[in-house]
Image (cartoon, rainbow, N blue to C red; front, side, top):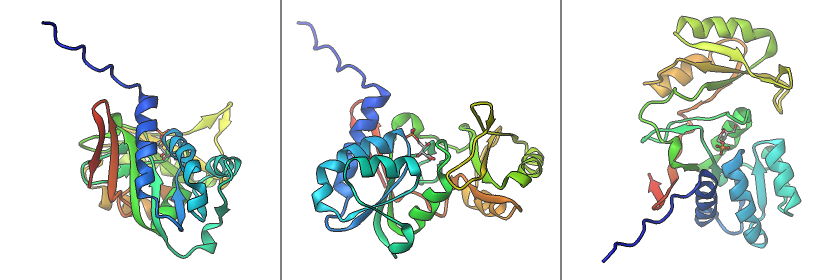
Length: 231
Ligand code: 5RP
């Protein structure tokens, strides 16, 4: 007798859709939900539209997410209008077993950290390729005031990192906050809390893409055998 063929592996896009849908279980009915940015979050936003009559709306972490939410008829509140959110749902570029993350691949890290900070719970949604033992293989995004980029690049060189200003269409990328992004390779971030604290103090740095203080309390990891919940 031949054994049944193994289930086909899911694509990365399907894994993202899987965790986007699973995150609906963490949305608190009757409340405003914090919404992150990125392709995984886009899957969540699309799924959230099915619950839109059961929530008050969202606080968004980027212009892109705001536009997607509004296009689906989900009201978007300014973060200053809301004191505290029950839950923030967002993706990650890397996450470790403790819930520490690198974020900012979509250049939205500053607003993401703000909304995460006003939320009681951070639910990270990610496909399994994002799980790492040590943060740093993904180029670390840092949002920087333009006049400080070269100085910040030199400071990273002293830590052994190679940094460059992110470009788009032949010019430095400009974030939703009117600032630039420096991406840093060559780092191995073994102490995310200490690293975040240090880099945050450098003049000109607005936000470093290490999320240690705002780490994930839950991670829904998409795998070919289903959603794995890490706490
Ligand atoms: C945007 C982010 C995203 O959460 C991160 O880049 C993951 O994106 P994706 O879901 O597209 O892989 O931090 O600034």
